[in-house]
Figure (tube, rainbow, N blue to C red):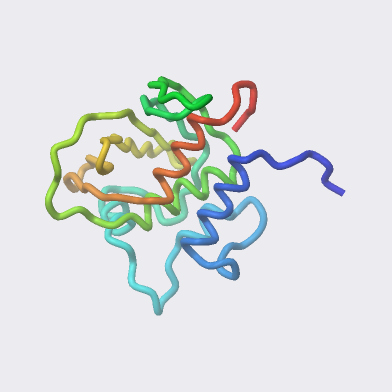
Length: 171
């Protein structure tokens, strides 16, 4: 029996992934990132997913790691605190949730004025790196096929959880 307790970040990542694809659509095992994000023949591909494929991301690419650099305001002990962090992510379930949250993002037509809050770089096994610039009100990816701006509630929640998790917890 697997006795290691699950961290809050892992539970949140799985919950976000299940919310995006449904509990039945999330396969188990190490191929989660690849299998959970590839649309079936009857589904329409998400605009962010299509954009990334046109920009050179392989449909078979699997996320290997991610680095999150950000500044966020969080509430600790009843006070609002500005927190800066650099977090490396290597766990397959969190990488899969990040990828699903990005691929399922909603494209923003009008870009609101917003300040930059950080970056997220996801590295894939085929050597591709997706740089996601994080703004207060939206996310932005610039690649060979242009720039796409989108919002994603699950991605916001995952990134917030990465900032607020207790120090010493590995991701």
